[in-house]
Length: 65
Image (cartoon, rainbow, N blue to C red; front, side, top):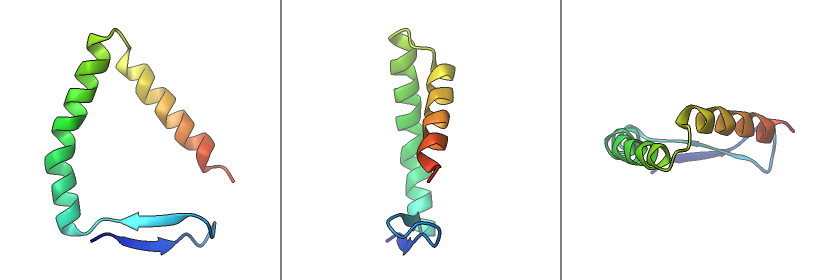
């Protein structure tokens, strides 16, 4: 079960921390999903590096209060 706490910087936001079991499951299952997602984007002709850059930028913009 993950640990969920209220973000002290923003009361409507929640911070989630995975347990050791959750981290292990994520790494075991997340890697194949990541590989499949990347292969699908590349096969569709979408530059994966651009996807990563755009996703990181969006995360930064959403993080600003």
